[in-house]
Image (cartoon, rainbow, N blue to C red; front, top):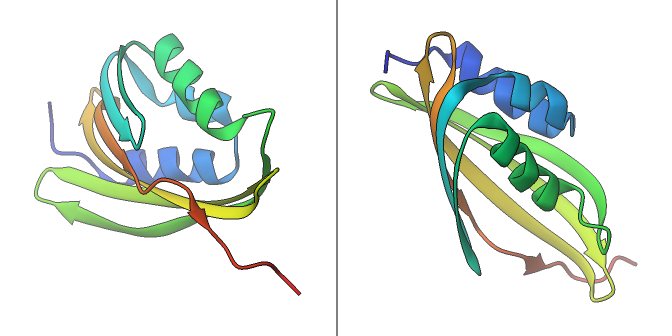
Length: 128
């Protein structure tokens, strides 16, 4: 691994915010090491195709409508970049928000290592 440039991690987050899964996947190294933790599951995959399936599960659930995705403030932790996104969704139970933070390390100009943590769904008050 090399020191991660903010551009690689930020470009990944920008693709997520745009809900452009193909662009996010294009930024992944062929041997990406990806792990994530959501409230009910640990996701462990290797390779862009497997990561694509995870991203689609998070952003394209047929039982939810995504109302917006916004970036959170990026930061550096030595050679690791932190980026994140906050997602507003609705389902049969109403409006919810969740946030995911990703820690990214670069490999050969691509995302080579990523760890993601998710806040879980948080119910929003009913809008008037």
